[in-house]
Length: 285
Image (cartoon, rainbow, N blue to C red; front, top):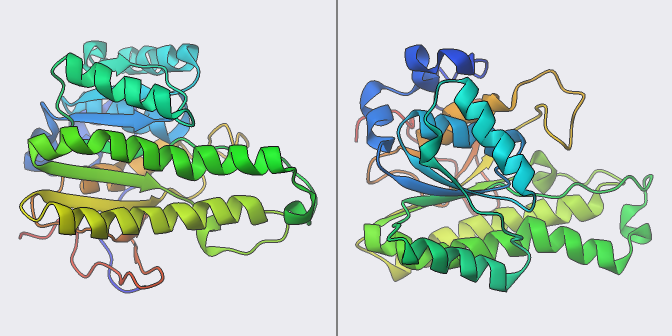
């Protein structure tokens, strides 16, 4: 690891979003207004936090998840923070089903929606199996884990690409985990899924940069760290801790990072052949 974006605050009070803008400079906050993002796993945790923050900035957010009631709870949470919920458009969708992902993208197109970016946040945890998960997991659970944690992100990003190319803004954020660098006994299947997601994000970045040389391609991977989510309900850290770095990446002007890895605390990470990004996310280009 080399490089970092300094000054990242991870404990902003979301109720005071008008005052702090989650650490974004005013011009970057204003740049999000009117843009449209598609977020998966938006009914809980990090997906809900990013949805609320983007809507607060004036962006339109298409929110997907398997459970319509959780998406409704996200809208309720935004309303409690005095954020206009007409900017949040729920679209229940099982991202492991190609036909549902394709139907969601077609629905957005039919409504004249042009995407500025996607956030691949949906994920499944691994059921506890002692220290021998790779030996004990059943093929059905293995397939389900990879279908959500990896294949779903591929389906969504691919389905969103035609719309993003029309806006000339190709932004994708892959929410990963430190498990993608780990080999912890008992976590093998989950580790594999996140390592594959890391590779998927950096591979999309390279392929899209080559395929769309005139577009603003910024496809990156973000480690959210530990926080209170459905996977980790015992944590005292708010899932809004991901928001400052998430917004810093999604609001970055043309010429920003592509195929890079970041931690929510501001660190710039290296992974495999991907070197750490060398500039602050708030540097003047």
